Amino acid sequence: MKATKTMLKASLVGLFLITTTAVFAQQAPPNPVTPISEPSDLYVGTINDDETNVTPVTGAVFFYNPTGTSVALTASTTDVVTGLGYTEYIWHRIGQDGEIISTESETGGTLTVSGLEPGFYRYRVYGWIDDNGVTCQSDEYQDMIFFVLRPLAITSEAGTDAIEQFCLGDVPTEQLTLTSAVAFDPSVEYNTVGGFPNPANAEDFELSYRWYAVNDEDAANEIAITDPANIDYNLFNAVGTYTFHVEVTYASTIKDRETREHAIWDAQVMLAGVAYELTVTPRPGRPTITIEAVTD
Image 1 (cartoon, rainbow, N blue to C red):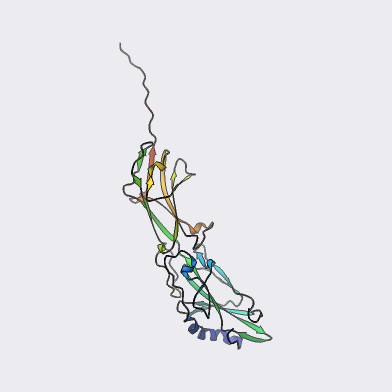
Image 2: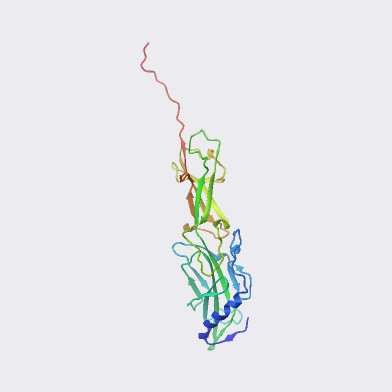
């Protein structure tokens, strides 16, 4: 443990504001590398004052929740060196170059941060101990770096040669092609506080896709599409009108969606600006013959 200082509690905050930036500047800040397929690619997790690399923490990636994203950060209660319990804490929000952006008013061991926008966040905690009326504070600290994922915006198109109607049993020999494009939702920007280098493109991340079709005559049963670039029209072997859809999520290796509805994004496949529909028409049966109006 670094040299322990004894000081008046009132002077602690001022000292933190003056001295911590120089120490932190020697550490590597978050700098994501692509492709981003797991949290370690974002460099999220913990980092101590004497370290230059982040210790990955899988749970340090969050989805953006449009009704409010928040997290509770909890500091340990006991000093592992002395065995004494911390009596108070001080929390700072830290920027990309190590500057203290803000000092939080919370003096307890848990800091709750709410109203989180997408992007990086870095919080630092110090603790001090009141030992028989003497306040002792170490200049050691730990930071937690976490990242809020940006929501996605999906567009999807059918190939311009997509067939829009055929008779049941008279299946086209061509293949249907569907494509999609994924971008960040432009209505939800990254937070700019702290100057962190946020990923520029949605497809910098590993994404998961699910393609399917729905027949309006059997809407409860989705038809799975495994290869959207090469779809055999034989897949649509029942009468009805089919619509096509794609769902996109962040890969579960980055953040498991579980049951979060706000962490799945979908789009209906379009063609020339309108929803693409494929109608399979029933083939008529044979006509029957009757004898009428006989003149013999």
